[in-house]
Length: 287
Image (cartoon, rainbow, N blue to C red; front, side, top):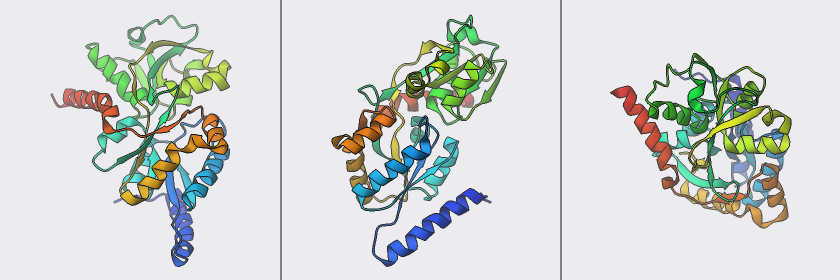
């Protein structure tokens, strides 16, 4: 039996409040977008401004739905309670038969990012293998940079990802993983390079308390994807609005707020490496 939380009931009631009058007047219903805490700093202010900007260009209300865990957003998306979401490439490749790529953010001139393995600035570790038998912080079990990649890295080194560390815990957020390492709560962590680099500009005292000891290969940047509830005819205008966001001053200011260059169109091939790692690790468990 599926358990519906009070938060989900309130979200549904809010959507229903929009849907009734909108349908009666022949207006488009609100666009429901799911996000996790990947956006640093004042998320409420930013999401409010972004919803206004998108709503004006789409001619329909835009509602952002926040959750702390990737799985919560993914479940809402697959159940049709969200229209689209900004998710990680790992859950995208796991459910790509039911999800459609809308747009991929561009950061540092490309739609790519990496996993950074970090330790405290004064830690003796100089490589990932030096963290064996230590205390390690995972960001989220559905994160590529914060979970899949570091486990794959351990596996390819000929070690067991489930036994490599003395103990592990989930922080449920890349910024929290950085804080955990900076404050000595973990010996190491693997984090999203976009989050680390953005925090390095905004909170240099935090990232300055950490040190990058390994950078992964590049992967496709976490995409915005459409769920089963969003029809193909509705996807085009949303994609056009996102990819054209840098064409006016307000849109550029919003992108600058989250340190992005813009959004681009990309195909599933951008995530082949993530899919390959996931398949190899799954094969390990089945062997």
